[in-house]
Length: 441
Ligand code: GDP
Ligand code: IMO
Ligand code: MG
Image (cartoon, rainbow, N blue to C red; front, top):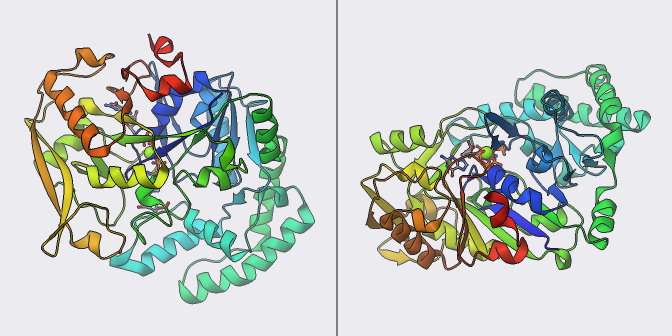
């Protein structure tokens, strides 16, 4: 049984939630390995829309076990709110949700530090989601973080909160001129959360090991995306975790030798939320058109997403960094009314044409995209379920993207619903999940 990693290839919001939901019936377990409730993964089932933030998108399938791995940072209040809202909508959590003992907690001072730091940065701010994800990972790396297991030991938890507050309060007061916290105002709610979450907290790396040994297949659900990776993204305009495929091993405790493949998710164009370089960014009526048709507003913060053309430089880089074997291309239908479509094939930089993604931070701010223009198809593709039914010009667009990226498409998504999906001819996905096409009919 294949254990596959799903990663975002651009700057997030590629439709990972939908793709994970389509694959979930073919796996036993879905595990999140990094990020926190900065993620917003949308799954549309009939008239119902779910936005998952901390819980894996597999949770809507009653036979799927969902794991929040050690690489994730968890805001317990947000997690409980998400759990309650799912339970109210009839989703089963008991027996299906497992949270790593080693996952770090987002504490109330983390969002406070996140916001204060952004305010201090002013024009240089990252444009974070403000959920405290960055500061929580700072504490993890600084070895003062507080983990899920600590919540279950009141004495230890109090001690760790005291040690942290001695430092954080000074930081908040003296550097950021922001509000401070008392030990009691943190302990009181957090110990209540502990009671709530205790039944779900466990050694998830052991659990995953046993499940894999017994033949279960595991899907690793990435959050954020390659260009937001702490090492490989557009630093410093990134998130604070390892969003790329390598993170799947460290963020779960499943060794790389048990991972069988990597699937990348890409939009048929590009979006980005927050600050930072974005070579193919559009402005004016065309950007507005794509934003409106694609409903490009943040699933977590509601911010309008910046929109631009497909960037094959970014995709080739994502394929290389993640070892992507096949791509799920989403939101093709959003381009249905564009008379022409453009693809970035290279970057012009100081008189040179770059064909590889530049490593140095400053270069991406300076590059100018080299575009190839193709004729738009001006025909609806919404809901199309087979490649043969796509307009010839849309097929030409896909073929050209394929040539530029160098790996085949496995899925093409033509709408937010599960069934609005094409399983490509000779899709590598059929090797991993032989009945994926049949299940969508
Ligand atoms: P994620 O963070 O990668 O899971 O993506 P988001 O959920 O933040 O954003 C993707 C949005 O596009 C969601 O609202 C999805 O319902 C929607 N979506 C996914 N695939 C398609 C598609 O093929 N066509 C259209 N029109 N919408 C899609
Ligand atoms: P999903 O999983 C898009 C962006 C923020 C900001 C930067 C750092 O839904 O694709 P952070 O709060 O993580 O410190 O913010 O990363 N960002 C995302 N952009 N989709 C996401 O998640 C994102 N999660 C974080 O906008 O630019
Ligand atoms: Mg999202």
